[in-house]
Image (cartoon, rainbow, N blue to C red; front, side):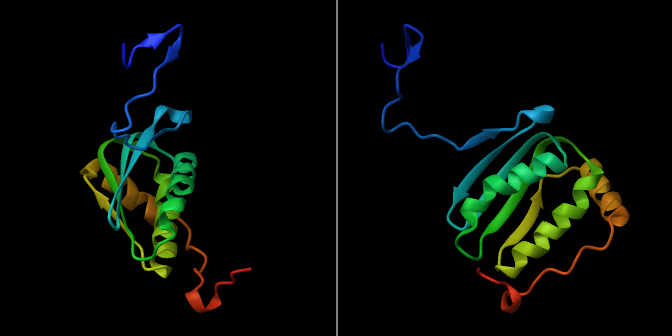
Length: 139
């Protein structure tokens, strides 16, 4: 009876069952998966990516960025659409990550999605300067 429901309660899986951290974003019907292998953080994006979802994504990724020199890969193989207004915040996030020796990479983004990001980046205002590590306050 292992793995079956008993009176509406699910039984817990065995200890050896591996879980992939998968987070569902309720607004917009998008989700993403976060997988960690060594210093590489792969975020598989699904559905549509807009500014609110990017904020949530950054919030969920932040706990994994305690160590320096992480490579964050945004995998767009299953991404259908990206809001052009994400380009500026995505560019700013990339610059902020670089201060802590992290790198942000796009993988699997088709030409349609890359064009949206390119046009969105051209339309985005100039970002505020990102503080260098010597000017960052820890208080």
